[in-house]
Length: 318
Length: 318
Image 1 (cartoon, rainbow over the protein chains, first blue to last red):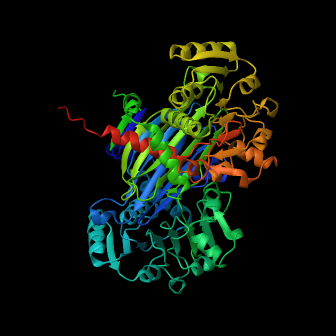
Image 2: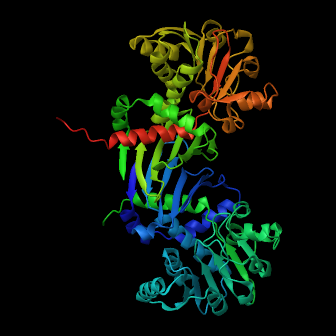
Image 3: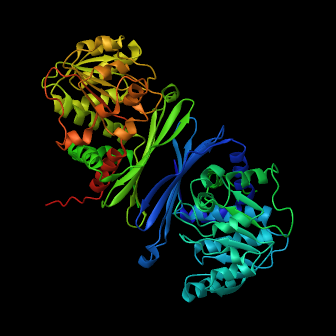
């Protein structure tokens, strides 16, 4: 049994091409090749824990991922994310590897999903990337979006000037040109690729700011309570994409929009079907598209398996 | 974060008095002090995986336990059980400890639950302990029952003479007097405390062999498919006890008996209520009592917390 520490995970990741690996997992899921039970959940006053697990049929491993967000941790000087991933043998049940990622791989696979979505749904020319939420995920999304959409202009919304200043400094060091705002709708108004990455339980973006040609990826809402988008935005969209239709019926933006009667289930297209060219993605520059990512166990299976396999790969020097 | 290996767990266990610790967990559960979501489950052709998790409110930790049984493993020279337990902080979500117990603590807490049940439901004088299933759990049950019921006479059923011979040799070395049978109903006929511990999906014990004064603890069935007792046995019982009523409504002997119309839900008493003297256990030597143990996350929370706390206890030499 191999224990892989966070530092080693971070060393291995740059040599793994995650976009095709995770895209393949979404496609397998939508093709019915994955067994993914409902998400396990523990809710605390200031945090929530998600247990995502399952396997791709006839693959080598099954994976259990635990990831938590405890939103008061930063006040204590601790990261809000925690967790680990576990790989077991599908044939014997033996524990093969513990990835002590402290929630990091969940953040990464979420950012990679954002990049995969953008590859299929972003307008051909992204003028400016809008980021709602100046936290860790708001940073990672930019890093994984850049090679896909080729844009370094950014407008970011955050809760206060202090976190915005830090975000701007961090991302400008990486070559982005970042403007900031305390008005979330300003992001939607002035960008044509928007990512929301907050734990908000009230809509931050409103339909009045929607405009033709925009794509929105909603990443933050992964429980029945959380919501970042006015449901009327989904109602106005030409294309609504879910990472998992069944999961989005009980959590996230789509759940909220269906509950409030703004959209019906038959309007939802699953991401894996677009990836496998079984359904169209964006077909014109004027469409409004929305993707709701609640986080799918296949992403965890894909990334955990890839990191473990890379960790046992021997490099033979010539 | 502390990793506790199986060898260390085995060294720590003898110094922990598990019966009151696990009994307290059952009582807390029945008093509504525990948050225990439904069991997570993965089913494979030759194995199943259970994820049990939750917490006692206002306690220090939350616990996630993974335990699997892969029933062809012994043919490969591997134990059928695997798994691990994880302790996290309830206040920050941080991973506190990984108990690499390989399913061992699940086996132990299951045997301890059998002993707790016997303390409340076994007849005053146990003449002979009947064990159905000559595997690991059939051995552990005897070890934990002995100090509670003070009986060393055993009749054991197994699948073949070879496994029975090994069981007899092992347990006689520990001081039990063991007879064996290939007819399961013989165990029920001739013992007044019976434990069933098999992964059977068909009843092994039948109502024709039932007699006044017997107590049966059914340990093996923890999925909707598994069944060890003819449901008519439950119908005939004076007292039917569940470790968790809600869990037993979807898996185990009680689920089977309710589905087949043999009993109704209002007849079931929860073990924690008996432990906390909120409901009576056995009240006469002629009663027939049945306990259905599907395995409850509070047992995992109790044992994992106890082992971790013992592991960090410093012993100050004088």
